[in-house]
Amino acid sequence: MPTAGTADGIDGPRPRRLTYAAALAGLEGLALVVGGVWLAVLGITGDPDDRGQAITGGITVLVLALLPLLAARGLLLRKSWSRGPAVITQIMALPVAYNLLQADSLAIPVGIVLAVVAVASLVLLVNSATTQALGIKGPGRSG
Figure 1: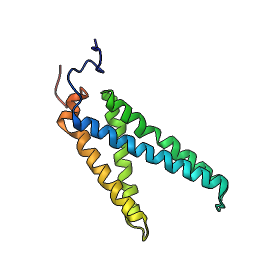
Figure 2: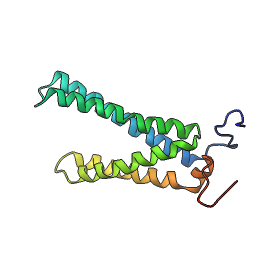
Figure 3: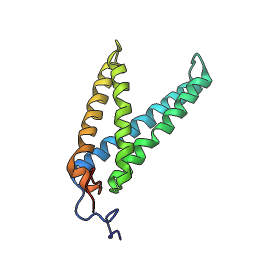
């Protein structure tokens, strides 16, 4: 039975690595929300080639923002399910960062930041302190 103040019955303070991973996932989610709103507003108020496509793109990005935001909340609450969506978010961010790095524009620094955040998040998420804090047992470990 879970104890008060902790999720899934895991006692002790939340490791800093888990908090940092949650913060990075939350920041990625917030960045996606900003990007989605920006795309949708530009689609409505600007002069895009295809207004419907711009608005749809903005809405899609807003929906995609739910994955890292829910993962961040789950990580903060020490829910074991939250590591999967957080890892998936980082894996999806790596090809986006690579594509941004291929541009000849202001997108290059954004790609660098995204790549650093994705790799740092992955390192934090697979760390043993994080997996223990989430109550995740490795293969062959019972009980």
